[in-house]
Structure formats: C-alpha cells, structure tokens
Image 1 (cartoon, rainbow, N blue to C red):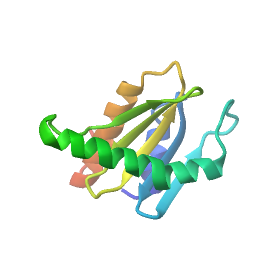
Image 2: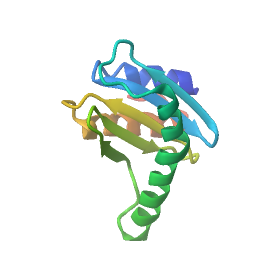
Image 3: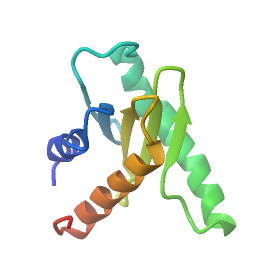
Image 4: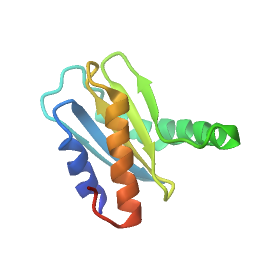
Length: 125
C-alpha cells in the first residue's frame, strides 16, 4: 500500500483523526483534516516528522529492545492533541494526531495493525 492510501485509511478511523503523516528518511507525506482548531503550522509539522519523531522512535526502540519486548508505538500528549507515532518495519514511521478527548492507545493499535498488514502485503481483516 502506498503512503497516500495508508494515510486515507487512517483518516477513515474517524473524526478524531486530525492529521496523518508518513516518514521514511527525508521523504515525508503530510495530510491534515480541514477546519481544525489549534492546528500546528505545516512547516512545524514537517520538522516534527523529519527530526523529532524519528529521534524519539530511535531512543524508545533501543530501550525497548534491551528488555521490554520491543516498541509498538509512542504517544505524546501536546496541549491541543495526542500524537501517536508508530514505527514501520522498513524503518519509517506513521504519525497520527488525534483529538484530546480521543483514546490514543486505541488509535495506535489500529494503526499498528495497518502497518503490519502493509508490511506483510496482505489485507487487514
């Protein structure tokens, strides 16, 4: 599945999804729901996907691999939203901003399922 298809599938999880991005190295694809209150600037989002999220994933993944059973996802709680960051098996990531009243762990588990289905080349059930 290409990045735009994955992004669309994540948006289909519901109106709690504010923003979806995919990142692989210097390649970042970003989409934001229209009409958001408290949205961050698109340039700021781009740097988050290029620098912040990969760095957080590297640190958490290395810690998780020591004796925690690995890393499934990260959740960062900003003032206006939760940021869910899911590592991809190819080294990239998927980043999803969800509304502050949403359940970020539930969204994270759904995105983890999509990412693993994508990597296995199958269809999600």
